[in-house]
Amino acid sequence: MTRRRQYDESDVRIRPGKGSRPRTKQRPEHADAQRAMVTGVDRGRYAVLVDADGPDERPATAMKARELGRERVVPGDVVDLVGDTTGAQGTLARIVRITDRRTVLRRTADDTDPVERVIVANADQLVVVTALADPEPRTRMIDRCVAAAYDARMDVLLALTKADLADPAALVGMYSPVGVRTVVTHAEGPRGERAIHGLADLRAALAGRTSVLVGHSGVGKSTLVNALVPDAQRATGVVNSVTGRGRHTSTSAVALRVPGPGAPTWVIDTPGVRSFGLAHVDPDHLLHAFGDLGEASDERCPRGCTHAADAPDCGLDEWVAAADDDVERAARAARVDSFRRILASRLGTSEADTPAAS
Image 1: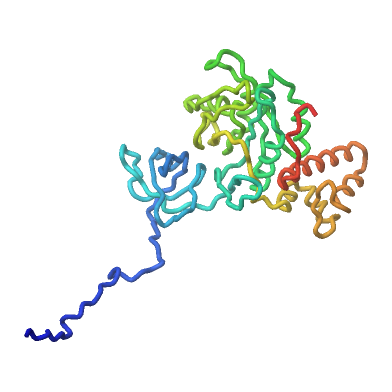
Image 2: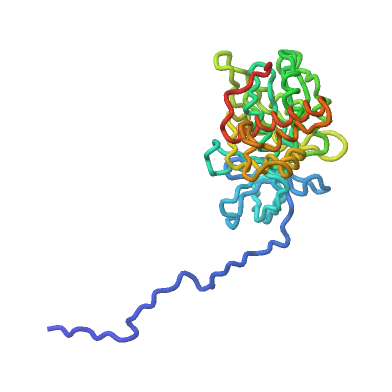
């Protein structure tokens, strides 16, 4: 009969901890990080321009550092890089910090989706590219873009293409009351060798600024980008004769520098969109983006006023009636009507797209 072994302290095994270093919430300061501008995003890799517009400017490729978590990095972001920032073949830097954004253009999948998607950062103005025909202009889409831009405190420029096919007067008159500037262009010549009439006006409107271009597929957005930046080589497509819609040709947003003298001019080309949700836009913020309308509502509207066309005792109607003469009254009325159309688009109460000829 075998004797049972007697155990002592030497037989007790202590389970090791997960690490010998104490956990800390402190992160490296990365004091030696280099500043760069994000120009493109492709499957987790970021095209950046180190020392953008500076004497040591150079392109590089980067990945997002783990400490940034799920924070989205988008074209137009100004970031801090560590690691190999030389841009040499096969090198990869790390984005460790996103600097404060001046502006952020967002959209949601629809008007009820609580999840916002950041499209671009640090843009000065939103350029809504719309064809006057082939495909037909969709004013509801334009209204939504205007609402999103004003909420982001960005200027809006309406770039009307294919002016050789339709008169732009109706659309110009529809958006000028709310402070939307307009440039009109059309292409002439065989495909691949087209001259863009009105391109000088567009260049002047973009000069020295960072502008993001948004529009439906097939409206000529990539054609304008290729004319502005000859080396861009953005793919262009045609409009389906049955559906009246274009085919997506740009698959990712990219920031491109427009060649020319003076202050740096950037355009950010985005993929064609078919919807522009506004769930993130606060209607009160939208109203005050219109300046004089916000002041009029503060002085005249009752508490809780929705400012819609059917809102009882809305002070905006009183503000229109209080104009000094018929000319000013008509101008105020047009401005209020335009605002209410954009507001209705935000609230999801507008009907189908308004025909451009109406």
